[in-house]
Image 1 (cartoon, rainbow, N blue to C red):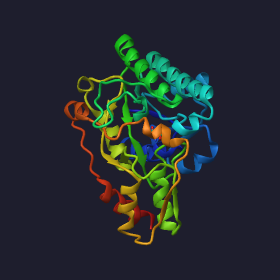
Image 2 (image 1 turned 90 degrees about the vertical axis):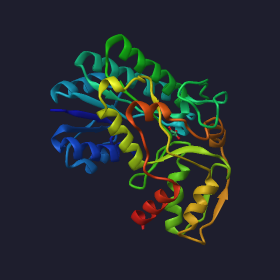
Image 3 (image 1 turned 120 degrees about the horizontal axis):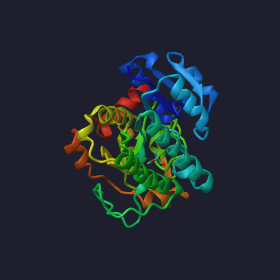
Image 4 (image 1 turned 180 degrees about the horizontal axis):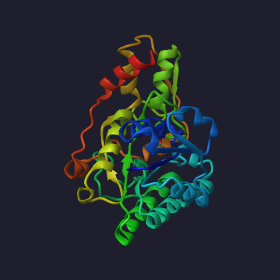
Length: 310
Ligand code: AKB
């Protein structure tokens, strides 16, 4: 029987992925953890523990006491917040991953760890960014994700740890708030539209970024983790693509439902980060290795979010 420990379960991705894993493996198989005790009320169906991912002894105790077989290590500081506390971000993002990988080696755990399009930089081909190319991240978050990818591959090749990873684009969901990323505008814009507020966008109208609707991100994660081990050939992290749009295009998509919705563009420090990231992603390696295919385009995502939020 699988026993699955999730770190950062209260986050944007964690909240939804934890529910999905509960559905697949059963509530009794899930140990949701987060540094923030207040999110525990979301996890009344399964076990919840407060965990600071820097606390390796506590992480180890939870793993051994609960006979954990898989860890989804989602806790991290994202790109925009990371720039405010660079060294702290490096410590949290790197040390926690090394804690997980070391415990995976000792306890023979399967590991899921998210990487990001933030691993790419100004010398990366911007359109249809390939799986393998120049990678010169400009943020501490991106540097930590690129270093993390190298460590994941190292633990797989050197110690045989079954670690799997996806380079997520900006994730858009309506069930929980985004936290500290450069792509967060695409989450916040829906809430503003539904509240009847004018939206101030912190990126310029023509900034294209790779994005993905949360149900597709959950689907990709589960499919990668369930793929037979020999099909998972990339052990750093897979490019996955779904959508590519600009603030102007998402605004137009929302305006189909709210013709009076207004937007103003007020780029801030996040513009520079966004301008260093790809416009769109070539995910052909994920397609050929484990058959990746997204379900949503921009308008079907918009329709679904507005239907659910309204
Ligand atoms: C961020 O904007 O920092 C994240 C990401 C693309 O990894 N959403």
